[in-house]
Length: 189
Image (tube, rainbow, N blue to C red; front, side, top):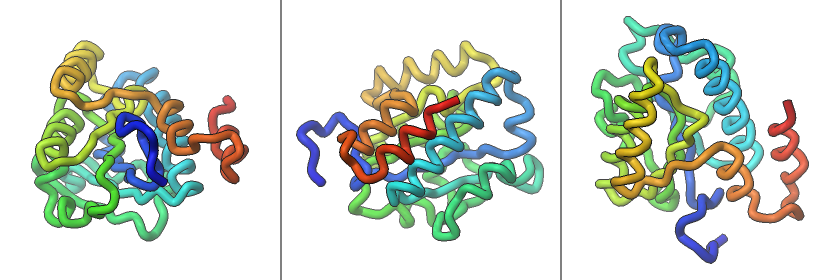
């Protein structure tokens, strides 16, 4: 499906990249931020599965920081590739850049921390010609000011900072979409 504006996220042209949502990293975030990022991530993972949006996931030094949070890992389809990394940008993870489908130029980013791995990944992907959407309610930092600074830098660099509900409705495009009820139900508390 070709959309009328290249500024909207399109389900047929995007993939979802979950960055470093690991046990020890998530535990270091504030309680409110942790709850919000978990809820947003679950919502986006379920919607991506419903709408056949490919998913990838990374883990930053899992030997020291633990594995991906089990409740999130359980929502990843078996086809979703995982990548271990030590560099902060996901583009440095062995094989990740090569795993990005060429017919999916849009990358929707969720994960932690906003001012480190999300920021560096977004800017690296953009430099590689990808259109990047950072989901504001799907990322956090230990210090809220660091997240705010990262989002401001990303906006200034031309990266789209969005929210999970916008992504879902842009993926759907129409209330007549066959998955509208299933996806919109994910927004209910």
